[in-house]
Length: 143
Image (cartoon, rainbow, N blue to C red; front, top):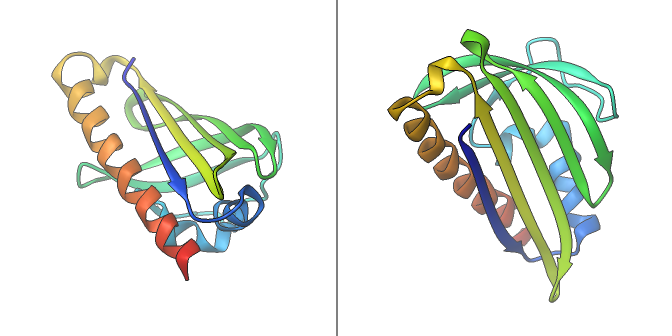
């Protein structure tokens, strides 16, 4: 199962960083793979399920997510199903560090289509997208 973990220190305390990450109306401003919510923006609460349009490696797809754990200003954890039977997981963790916040994004993917070299390619693309997403979040917090 490919897993990708990326971290960055952002220039704001966890409560301020959480404002960006939890404002679903701004999700596309920082999340590099996000293309929309077909059923409208979801409520961020444990147990919420929602659909998200995503693009990775230039390929559009749709994921169905379930929020399994949420603690404001600390973490958001989701499990999901993607195209072709792919199982997904995403964890966003925030922790105070210096005068800002250490944000860690962890994504994992599992399923027959991702065995072998395809899994490596998806993991690389997901890592690049996570780096870009964290950089976009940094820019939003610097405004």
